[in-house]
Length: 572
Image (cartoon, rainbow, N blue to C red; front, side, top):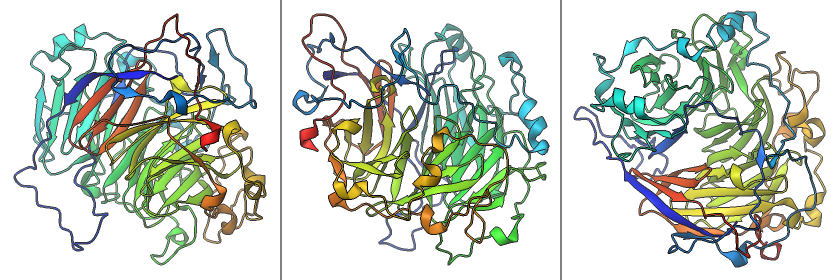
């Protein structure tokens, strides 16, 4: 809907200076623009510890016909003449009594990762479902004598603050440079951290909260560092465990990290050498040697494949890693799991975007950008579309059903660093997308398939498309059998698919629909690096530690505004 987003909070997290013993970053090439960064800016995870209905697999419908525009001075204003349009007439779905549209994936349950491997059976079932009996890390981080941890600063009244916290309130965890901060966003003194951890030489580049194990007395967090180290941290008890210590398994920086969907123990880390590694938070590390020598990809290898150096189906599961894949020799910038918990979208510095069936360990699609690396990626709430952003200053929308690029969103003046769907502004026909970039701007996009005029030339699919094999990718069942792309470039799942069919050619600009933003606003003085949507607000963060929260437009009776969640077709 159109309206004004009002700035509610402007927090500034102090950026910790380098540790006195930290050596400066060495750059052998003064013209290089992709030197491993000592920081990834301020990245956040928002957590509600109280149990609530899971909504990530649903699309949301809002009745905004009677919504009212705020009379407050504009802070972020959507343009009404850009956002009035006809919605698509295709693709209807059932709506329940609460006005929530059911996803076509509703009722589909993906098997647990590695469920077909008896060596992992005990691992997958050993944790108690009772939140009071959750397993915790072993070491106390406050009393740690490790040289990896420099200092821990808990709030002097931490126990009291935790007791007074509203279970439905928001916690936030933010990594910035060599610090991790824990904030209570529902507190009147939200700028006072509950705990602040300073690390010695390692910079925290990414982190994730396990939504499956969280509770009022327990939160599992994993942090990935510039040294390759990973920490499993439980803030309520202040306990932690160090994984991949000193790069025992992979010594390159961790660029992104996520808990596996619905898993209490397993998480996936993307390393900057192009590796994807699944770890178990409770396993010890062991020096890693590829189990299948034929799967080691030569440095000069340019073919598209997912090289499986250790499979989840391996019987050797006593130590980490659980599995180890190599996508390329280029840095992985980000990845995201699909809502159906079966597929993985991966974007890399080489400008590639891959779709991987991570349950089968199989590469399904590979797309390329117009130029430059891809930086960020996310899935639509119904899993039908993937959105990427990158160094070409564009937000790109990809359709998995059609195995093609649907639209380019043009409006940023610099690299796009984060993209997200707004689940509270999506329904079965229309999608709201948000993006932020190094141009310090926040852009909102409204996308509807019916408003895009598909060029006639684009309606003819080339022979090299894998659409026939994966048209219904998100509706197919995934079993636990091994299926991966091997050195002969064939899939061992029974269907022979050439590697040329996996790689999709770049769609010419003349054949790609262009989508204008419904709102574009500079919201910071520093490059933005994170974007989040909550039911009542939009949040952004920048490289310099600013976290800004904007209230959504107020809803009420008496407005003549009409609902509009897609950009004008005449502007495409």
